[in-house]
Amino acid sequence: MIGLVVVSHSERLAAGVAELAGQMAPSVAIVACGGDGAGGLGTDYAAVVEALAAADSGDGVVVLFDLGSARMVAEMAVEERAGAEGAGAAGAGEAASEGAVVGPVLVVDAPLVEGAVAAAVRAQGGASLAEVAAAAAEAAGAAGSGSAGPGMAGSAGAEAGSSLVPATGSPEHAGLPEHVGVPEEAVRAEFRLLNEVGLHARPAALVVRALDPLDASVVVRFGSAEADAKSVLALMGLGAPGGAPVEVVARGADAAEAVRRVRELAERRFDE
Amino acid sequence: MACTAESVAAALRAAAGAVVAHRDELVRLDREIGDGDHGENLKRGFDALVSKLDAGVPASPSAVLRLAATTLISTVGGAAGPLYGTAFLRASTAVGDVAVLDGPGAAAALRSALDGVVARGKAEVGDKTMVDALTPAVVAAASVAAGGGGVAEVLEAAAEAAEQGAASTVPLVARKGRASYLGERSAGHLDPGARSTVLLLRALAGAAR
Image 1 (tube, rainbow over the protein chains, first blue to last red):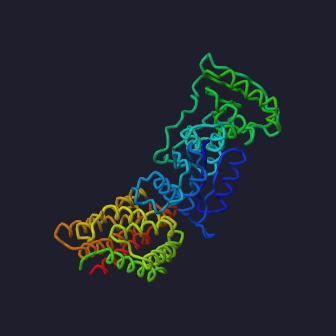
Image 2: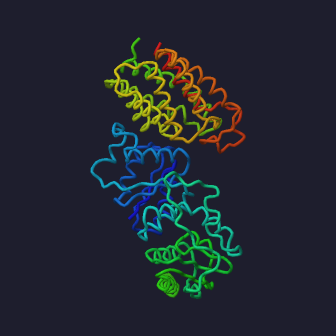
């Protein structure tokens, strides 16, 4: 399973982001790495090196950061692991090299809170390093459509990347569903959200986790808005409240199973 | 004077002295357009470096520079730790396995240090960063080295050019680093990273004389 490292200048900010993301992804190793190591604001290189090792199960780690120098420290720590600066640099980070399984690491430029939540939920579902990184990077667009609310035409991801350049080495975007029409073979279902809070954070995370292993492209529609059902932030951005009617449209080999899973979750009131 | 490992260590001690002497100035500059920690962060890093040199000077110029790199990376923090750490690490690699550093070697080390800083911080000339001081320093150093200058002359020219480069940051609007969040309000201030680059080069040059 992919692990996450949250690098922040503030110890409390890092811990808070990890707490929030961890609520929706209980099995994911989310390591908070904040502060200068002496109780003040700043970043601690050695602590980041240790955090990478702690978050790594061998599958890989996605690193998120708050401000510029946190990114530099994170990238430096990643290079140190990879030995990119040459074997002689090993003295700076011996913590990482002692026998542990070393997976690949990506430092991803993403909004810290939204990116951590989106990445954690994808990681919980067993997604690959590239998929988890993409979920974080695309969180900017998903969050943006959320603020537009259901009155706007579905635009999840439309603005992704407009203000944020993906970090070096970040993967290609996995590709959000097309908004232009749905082919005839799509599987659809309409039902009401029977739970009290609607598609809030936890229910949205359940949907994403249920769909993640399936080979299906799934959107949820509410009013005139639609959201990628594999993005927790996009689902939350629909603002669909309890009792709201939604439509699920799925394409792909597992389309029928995808629709069945979402309907079942709704019928179970998302286990509330 | 031959520039041995001991000479490089002495130059780094001089740099540490300059950082201590100018700590308050760097703090003040960084408070104007940054988060105010540059002076203290650098002082902490160079204090740590001096302690390590006191415990023993590595055998070659390259190894001394590498000790500086690893120490600064793990003790300075902020943006300056990774940036100066990378600079010294690249310089160390560029110097290679020589016992005595010469003018061209010093110029090549500065060039590699600049390349490392640019790769790490992604800043260009005109962004109001230490790159604005280091870039003209590298050009001047290469010119003097090509003309047969020794380490002292190379570093002297580099420091002089860096001083002018740093001064050029005053009217600039920052495009990188914490100061970039200030936008237009960052204009009219000397960049603290460019200033510390000048201080370090001046100290290194002075020690090499």
